[in-house]
Length: 264
Ligand code: PGA
Image (cartoon, rainbow, N blue to C red):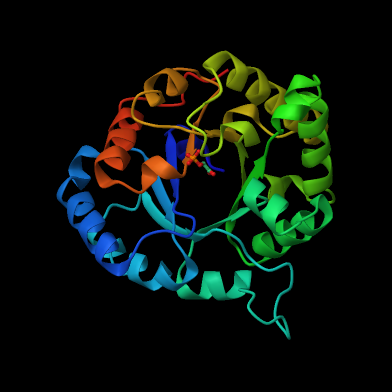
């Protein structure tokens, strides 16, 4: 990622399987009204079918706004009923895709190996990738957090060049914090973010200032300030709180007052 991009905080709304067309109209009416108060990168990944609708608002918003997919196929094209390709996402105007979310790993049994192929395919199609990693409560309680994260990173990013890796954003999302209302403390998040940064910068020589590591898991307007105050947390991947425009705006405003430039 470029230095300039990395110097601004990033809020990514992961809408999951939510929102109706009316909800989206009301959301964007307010977002556009308040756009001048936003000075951070703000991205949204809606359900696939709503992607064109979100893209239709792009011209009313600053370039800081991007639209992406919540998942993409491991294959370029072919007989894969129900799947969506990275190529189609790029074709329609998406800038990014989320890969390896814990809900994909658990409900759809996505392995580290398949996630690795998905990442490679997305990068080949010039999409930025938000690659999610995170431990379960049982793994944290058993003191395996770093081993789990390292394993996910090593397998998920296997074989990628440093140039490809520079298009990847890592989202640390402890599984126990997703949708539970129980976020990781700043100290807990920072510790893992530093670990991820060290792993990636020492093993593949990435510039630590250009590596973006987001935190995800029960982020809301009440805890965002404390999280973003950490120079190791470059932004947030947000589920529940990104669905309500007032909360999403508060997250964007909190991010706009900070830069990541004082990093590490
Ligand atoms: P949450 O979800 O903010 O609702 O915890 C985060 C995510 O799953 O990305």
